[in-house]
Amino acid sequence: MLTVHLLFASRSPQAYEAVLEAVSLAFPGAQIGQPANVDELLLNPVSSSKEFLVLIKPEMGEIELALKSTYGDGSARWPVVSLSDAVHSTGLDVIAPEDWHGRLLAQVFRAALQKHELVRENSRLRGDLLTVARRISHDLRTPLSGIFTTGELLKEILAEQSEEDAALTLPLFDSTQAVLRLIERVSHLIRATVDHKAKEPVEMGQIAWAARQGAEKTAMQRGIRMEEVSDWPEVAGVPSWLETIWASLLMNAVTHTGRDRNVKMEWKELPDEYEFSVVDDGPGVAESKVGSLFQPFESLHQTHSAKGLGLSITRRLVELQGGRYGYAPASGGGARFYFTLPKSDSSSSPSA
Image 1 (cartoon, one colour):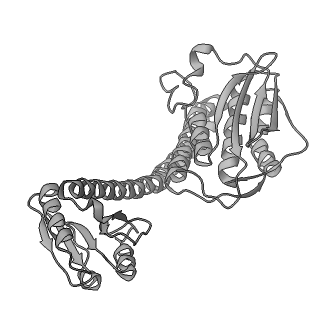
Image 2: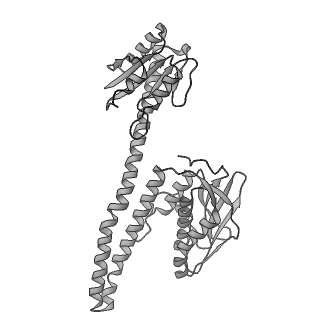
Image 3: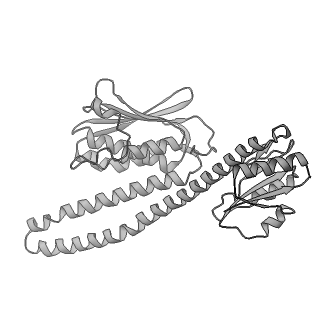
């Protein structure tokens, strides 16, 4: 049930009739309340039913109180529409006197309620996603730890018979580690999507160095030589996200470029942004696969393939920082994966 609260700071026959007509058109069957002021409404506990607040020629103090009331998750308690010719505020739909007509107001009321419900649903979904990320990270790690411990015990028992028998447990450990990495990636992606972090000044050289260390072992095993430029710029970004982006691009290159190849980390300055790239001299990417490189789970159908999350995580983290991402064939052969960061002030928040 919807309750529409009408608060008349100043009686206006034109506004009163127009609002009543609008409410009947927009919300047939809605309850109508006429409190003396916003304080009277705030004394009532937050209701589980829907509420809508219409302020007619309100004072600024009334508007501030109306917009201050929130649910426990911080979202607004009700949509607020003001019929006024002078008072404006963020988060408020203000309708001037020349538009005080029943049918027009009905459209405004419906739109305001729909917007409010979308914001509420978005807030609920963000909370649900954050809960999922935490539960995935915690609840799935516990049984995997049990599997890993049991595998270690089984390996010791088999080793007493022969090393060959003990080696049969290696796929168990490899699979456990793969699942743990997948859990971490999914949790990281969800947390980044839900919990937008503020940008800060970042020395990209330090971030690139840290990400490179994580890929060095695999690179050495495959005979891949890794290089990077000697000087790096300072950028505005989220340090942990940038390290994840570099790590993903580097592991992608080291894993897919082939043995005894070269991988280089580069950057260049553009008019409005910085562009960073990982370039290899491997076989490159087949043209038929280029369009789906950054799509999540793209390679799940391929036997023994990666789980298709690395580049999709890169895409999301770059987007959240207002940048671009992409792939292009490297000059002379090979692949070039790149991302950009805008030359924005370091205190700005990532784009949603």
